[in-house]
Image: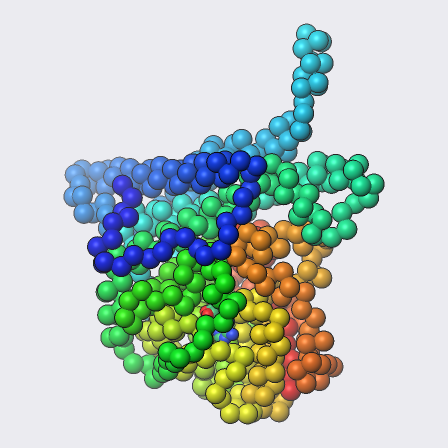
Length: 119
Length: 390
Ligand SMILES: C[S@@+](CC[C@H](N)C(=O)[O-])C[C@H]1O[C@@H](n2cnc3c(N)ncnc32)[C@H](O)[C@@H]1O
């Protein structure tokens, strides 16, 4: 789980001074997008942890929890995880790719009516 | 020192990360990479196939400049999504670097005060005013900027920044985040083979990322660094000492420093100018002229100016940080005209230069996008240098 607990007693401000741009016509969409990506990040963190777990079990047959927390992936494992995250992100952001195709056109309802009429 | 090209070099004050904190930072890196390589290219497609034709239909002409393109793109949903994703990645990046620092700040501060002694020095000035261009907004969305202090002998801004830069550039600046300095020094060695500086000054040196490579390039020179922010200078001092690189750091405003006239042969700055202001740039140029010895050189390294972009659309992409990443002087600083700046500061306009220096960090080469765009820092593969000789 996210380690957001602050044992050092210091709290750093998490918001940058300055107005945050509004991107979508409804500000709720901006918030939702940020939440979805934060969640995507947590799933990815859990996936790494699971990967660590499997690797430790595979090589040692048993595990010690502290080893998961201090596990340092090698260059090769980091590259495998990079590849996994890339395909993971393209799943999550699939909808954005469509913007260059049919979805990008503003109004396709009349076009769709034509298709309906033709079948 | 064990340096591996795929991870940040662990000097004495680099924050440690747990496996989960590391995974969170790695996610941000992948997220940024995905945007730069998979989503950003579509922005141009959307512009060419949808936004530009719609603009032409409405106005009977193509957009005049990057500002008109920006206005038109702001209304496009693909661009809104890309921008919102990029802004969010920046916020997640800082947070992923802040949490580990909060957790271990006491230890980091104590490490910073007990590093070995490499012969450098640190001089702070608690009375120095932090310029308005740093207090008005938190530059590039780093909460608290470079200057905010939350503890005694604080180094948190430096610790967050050091790790943040590594992830921001997706490792493309090298294990020591030193690519801008190393590339600039390589250019100087090549273009001015006879230059043998005895004293070098690095303006706005931050954590010393770019200052360190000058010691490699010019081992006999004394290196000085100034910055306005105390927490980042304390961090820089500990970092450089622990890396056995002696640097003399002082808390000063580059617009007005306490060094003597003609006391440097080489003055450098790396991605400093775009974080200042029109007036500050003018003052900094005058200070450089005063501090240089005859024949001395000053060079500023930045991302390339708008005039070097292929078209207005690329300029618009380069300009993303201005409006979306709290970089109020980014836009104007990319319009700086070196010949006029030379004249104004008293440099000989015939001896100023501009150069696109290839990135010195070869290992990142094959993964670069070679595009100068928001969110893809170091991806261009070149640094824009402009400089003046006295
Ligand atoms: C982007 S960072 C520089 C990074 C560093 N030069 C490098 O290459 O890694 C900009 C730095 O300039 C400092 N700065 C901004 N304005 C300044 C000024 N007028 N005088 C001195 N330092 C300044 C900031 O505090 C910040 O640390």
